[in-house]
Image 1 (cartoon, rainbow, N blue to C red):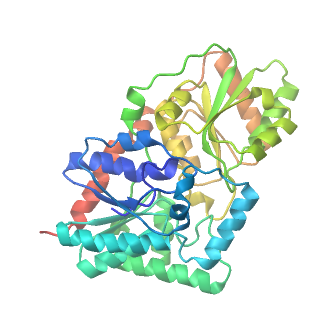
Image 2 (spheres, rainbow, N blue to C red):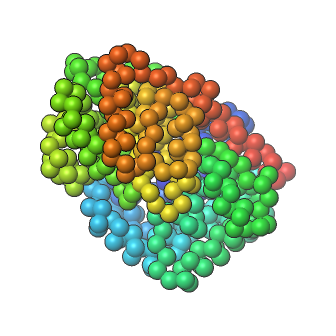
Image 3 (cartoon, rainbow, N blue to C red):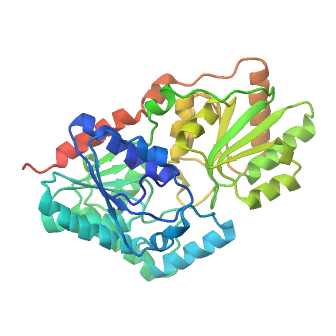
Length: 419
């Protein structure tokens, strides 16, 4: 398994593969994970690594010269201002194709070549982004004949965050993706829209070769978790995660101000678990919301779950962007496990449909301040009256990570070589 993002790195990008590796041994598979060594990153969480203790997993770590590894002595680093982050991303997309993890991918490929001399592997699995990991895994599959299973957490070509400075860049990404998919035995994706994009772009892909395995939650993370003690009497709305690119709290802040200006008796308590950058705190201060905000900073995943359970409702947003209908924010599906009512401000697409299926959700467009304000007030009044809606338990159950790992194991079984 090629996985650049893996514990002790934190944030949502590590969850899918780490939880797959946690539960695959229950289905008769022993994962060997090729991942990075110590790196500088925006968040680290040792408890995510401890969660894998005692499982039949072998972790192989590389040392290399990708930007994060070169800064490893800095450990957890501060996320830059959004304008700076976007500028650096554009530079990276200009000079590194498919991404700036190419140096790590070369090291991972070299390590993979060593491992196939020591073990008899039945399948190679890779999850992207980063998509350079896909090219490395595909090359190893091509050299060894070991079947390749490729997993998409996001689109590659047409990715909502990618910058293509020239036609050459766009064509090169498409060529690399075509090469990978030509070699893949099976493809897994987080939602139907990504599947439709891939099949429309590459006519050699058959529908039955592309399986949908959505994001999910680990029931073990919630079964033993207990809410934090509360003494306040306000309506607590919580956001867990980070803000970047088109994921911004500004429309929400403006909606909260509108609610309070028009309904002074409303008592709101806004909690943030993750990375709330100074630029957004400054916006909240300008809007007169500073006293309502509790910023917990980055917490362990266990504590993040406890904060969700301590809330009266939770909220998320994804802004309007290219191919927004393909975005499957992992946040939504972990939120589902809390069974809490949600405010979901997202464009048309996968997230909106899944929030509708969940049932206990107020859904708005991401930049519709009036609709967001109306939803907050409706949630507040329902809370005061004790009639907040309940989650659809069948939908919640369909995102259990143990069951999703079983689905992945079936994909391995359909592609695995016979030894």
